[in-house]
Image (cartoon, rainbow, N blue to C red; front, side):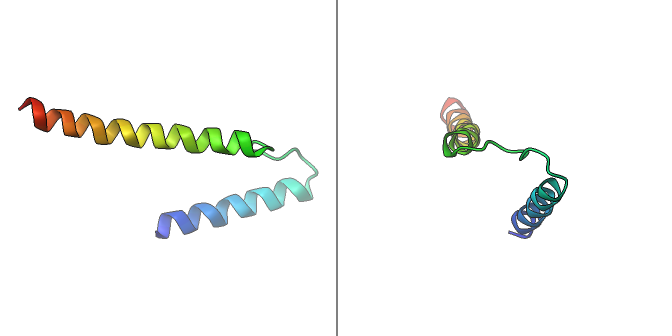
Length: 59
């Protein structure tokens, strides 16, 4: 949980700095882009879960 909080604080600071410097946001501007990133993460976690489950079955 500590790492999640640190990541949120760092992201907030980076976004704030980008706004001050009038640079484009360094993240997908639309909900679809953010959900795509969430989907990539969930797919990665699902693979980890399934692969460990398969290793147990194949032993």
